[in-house]
Each structure stands twice: as C-alpha cells, then as structure tokens.
Image 1: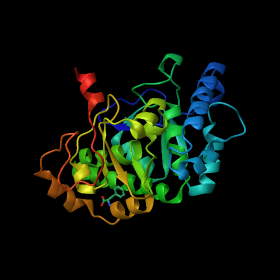
Image 2 (image 1 turned 45 degrees about the horizontal axis):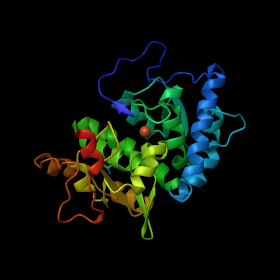
Image 3 (image 1 turned 180 degrees about the vertical axis):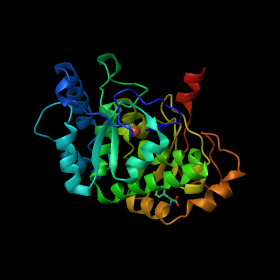
Length: 286
Ligand code: PHE
Ligand code: FE
C-alpha cells in the first residue's frame, strides 16, 4: 500500500526496495507465518473465490515458512509476469504506482509479532504475500493490478488519487465477488484476516452492495476496523472491463463537484445484497 509524504529509510534504493534477506528471519518468524497460513487455509475454502485457492499454489514453495521472494517471483513470473519485491513498509504513492505499472508487487519484509496475529495497522509480509499474491497469479486480476498502477500514475499527475484510492480499497483490499446467489471473498485485507474473513460474509452489520464505479469513488471508507460496507463485483473480467474501458479523466472532473457518500448510506439506485444493521460499528462507537 501507499501513503503520502514518507521519508525513505536509509538502506532502501531510490525505488524504495530493499533486499528481503530471507536468511535473517528467525524460527519464530517462520512459525508465525505457518500459524497464520494454516488458519486461513483451513477457513477460506468455500468462502474465498476459487481463483484465490488456485493461486495459493504459487505460495507452496520448497522452503517452509515465509516465502523467499526470489523463488516466489520465479513462479509468479511464469504464471503472469509479476514479481514480488521487498520494501520496509508503506511507500509513497508514485513509487507504489510505478511498481504496479511494471508488474512488481511491493511487500513489507517484516512479519507481525505473536501478540498481533489478529490485528495490525501496517501491512506485513503475511498480509502482502498471502493476501495479494495468489490473485496476482490469475491473468485477469494480474492485468487489473497493472492497469491500476498506470491509472494511478495518471491520477497522480492530475492530483486526484483520493478517488482512485477508494477503488483500490473497495476492490483489491476489501472486495467481494458474486458467485451464483452466494458471495465470496477476494480482497486481500479480508482474506489475510481471520476475523474479517468471518465478518465480511456472515455478520449482519455491514452493507453489501453491487459494484458501481461512480458510486464507489464517492464513498468514504474506514481504515481502523472492520468495513461497514463492501462492494460486490460480478467477476474479475467485468471489473477489468469496466475500469480499463472507462477514461477516468472525465470521471474525476464529474465527481469533483459531488459530495462524498457516508460509509453506511444506501442510495435508491444501489443493488443491495445486504442492508446492514450497522450494529457492530454502533456498538464500537458507543
Ligand atoms: N482506465 C483508468 C484511467 O483512465 C485506469 C484504471 C484501469 C484504473 C484499471 C483502475 C483499474 O485512468
Ligand atoms: Fe494490501
């Protein structure tokens, strides 16, 4: 993920990459990965979109524990031409977009502590690799991520990345996809989280509404807790089609004068899969 105004740490290259230094992980680091991996691998079948399960194979590497990015990139490169590169943590937007546009996914190289198994604020190697990499092995999603990077570069030029960031958030990080009359998970922020993998599908609190690009780009989101709203796409093909074939230039101009939509609002035109009770968010706020 990206963020504005960060200072490049000493030792990072001008593109913010660092050596992963796989040999420096401790036995405890690897065991933390294994615990998280086992837990999600047991939970996700039937909940996650089948393309994710198929993509998990790229993570089954010869060494146990945290994937070695060199080996991982070799496999991913064969599948879709993507690589995984290590960074110290969040990187600036322009650096992030440039990597994506060139089919390089940036991953934090550190792993969370044992007391952070269920929640941490900064994306670590488990979120970045387990959450994001399986779908990068899917040709359509792989193209979507590159197109997003290119779109980000254009949006940055125009100074309008806030709206585009919402698209990343509500698809790549917290997206749901329709499968017949069921919903499935695909967003990395959900699938790398045990608790949100349950909440996002089963809890009556959040709204779940159909993907609508204009509507989505006006909708606020929260970064500090479970989402109050999830957008549901029809398929990866449809997501790529709608975003790639829309020139966002005029869209940004059109959205400029329009007010943001509050996170829990349901509009008359929405395709509502779930009208959430918002009980969870309300209890938290009280
Ligand atoms: N089509 C968008 C633009 O014109 C870019 C984009 C493509 C954004 C795919 C997200 C996903 O800027
Ligand atoms: Fe992420």
